[in-house]
Length: 226
Ligand code: CA
Image (cartoon, rainbow, N blue to C red):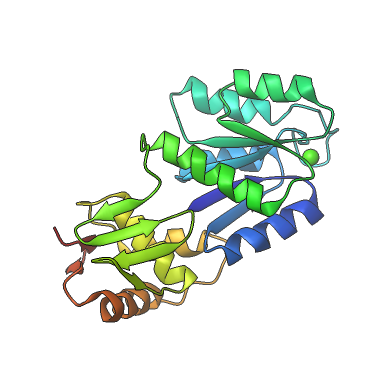
């Protein structure tokens, strides 16, 4: 998934970004409201992790619920991107305001990474209107929770980035995803992108899944065969 992490605490942000990248997510990390607004105005994210206690502008005083403004801006313009709010302990008021402002879920700091990942998956699943957690297409089945992929019932072992590419394609069956869209899913704008990275992962996926599963549309991108 492509994630926006809005967190002003450098230690928490840094460790969260690292952990989420290891899980195969592309993470864009911003520290304040202005940068967060600029990000959501120009980019699409699959999910936003939003710390509520943010400085409203670089260097300004931290307000307990400044992050709520981002949520209000998004929802006011009809943007339904899933948002998981991160709040301080003992801040019941914050959690209530967050949910009232349109957050999909919240986590109280400190939290376990596994719980965050499970809540992210649940929120994205609900957002996509899917009751079943697994994605299926033809003989392919991909389970975002267990990270298991099977083809005609047989397990297929994928690296985190191969998994991310396949997941992106399976989330929008029938759609042609451009190389740039797939690169976004892999890295976000923070990381280095090797120019042929997507072709390499697609090549590896074709070796593992058979040549016909992922089709190319010359000059446009990739899509799943029907
Ligand atoms: Ca904070």
